[in-house]
Amino acid sequence: MDRKVLIGICGGIAAYKVCEIVSTLVKSGAETRAILTDAAQQFITPLTLSTLSRYPAYTDKDFWQPSHGRPLHIQLGEWAEIIVIAPLTANTLAKLTYGFADNLLTNIILASSCPILLAPAMNTDMWEQTAVQRNWQQILAEKRFHGISPSTGILACDRIGKGRMAEPKEIITKIKSLLYTAGKKDLVGKKILISAGGTREHLDPVRFIGNPSTGKMGIALAQAALHRGANVTLVHSIVGKILLSGVKMIEVVSAAQMQQAMLAHFAQSDIVIMNAAVADVKPAKYNGEKLAKRSLGNSLPLKPVPDIVAELGKLKQSHQYLIGFAAQTGDIVPPALEKLWVKNLDAIVANPIDQKGAGFGSNTNQGIFLDVEGRQLDIPSCSKLEMAHYLWDFVLERYGANY
Ligand code: C5P
Image (cartoon, rainbow, N blue to C red; front, top):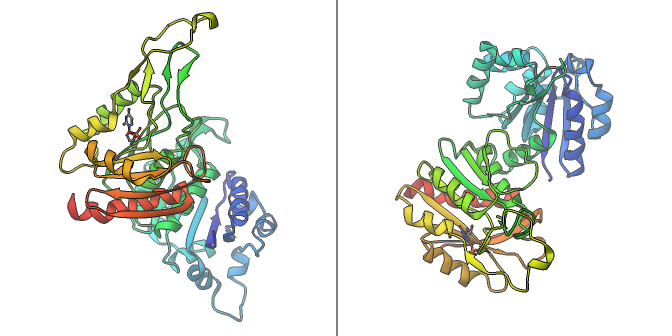
């Protein structure tokens, strides 16, 4: 990631977590520079940040230092492709909301034009104050500002409540998204429904028919949509712990449960992506007790599960856009095209799961986007988050004009 990231650190205990963000960004190839407010230096030192970033870490001392070049805040404001403020305190939030510029960080904000990502962290009572909430809502309504709300958990004051800074991993994913889109909020107001992961069809409480899907692609689609401003619902199978604050999450196990959840949310959705790998069949009979090995026999009678996306295709209204995923091997286009038409989809992604670095469980993916207008667009091998953004770009090219 050959990009320029400026991290502003304010005075909060979550400042120590920013070291991990800086370290990860540097390892991924991003040029990363850090600014510490006076209060931040009560928690971590410029030495920590300069060592991790391989650049000087700036403080207000540098701001007031006579320089031979252009003023520091102008140089850094122009240099940054994204500015991340983490942790963001109530004080700096208020200053940003009203355009104050009384230190290096707030001057840089006014001297820059790139997207700004804010990751607040504070005690629950402070976070819930009317003034703080008003400032938060007000600043997020501005085009340049993006937020990653605090999560709920144990706080430094020993309380359990809302106020923990979002996890570094979640912040890094959002930085990547904002760098990809240059901070476009082009899905604001859109209700998006996504399914992710592989379903399990149980024979008894321990055995099931399933597949290796990990849900990574569907999660990336949800993250990318969220980062572009959408209102996202993710119906997912058992995929482990997911960091997705701001997304409505519904966990299901079987195709029947996924069908129920998708149908319950379909009518109010604008764009629906059926990314889940749904088991096509299930054991004809479910046994409530674990079957003894000797009673398993040599064959397992099966019956089909509902084709969820085909059912959604029948219910689809003219304002809705429905996308499927076709996990294929060999020649991926003809079977994907057949599914596009048979299931009444608007578009489908043919996903070559037999290619190295694509498909189930992989962190990267590739595919071909096919739509009813005959477009056939290649998505080169890239991270699943990037592939998700490609897809949203393709959908939005048509969505704005036709829906
Ligand atoms: O399994 P198949 O290749 O037909 O999957 C193509 C699309 O159909 C995918 O979007 C998948 O999520 C969906 N599907 C479904 N219900 C099934 C099987 C597949 O919605 N029972």
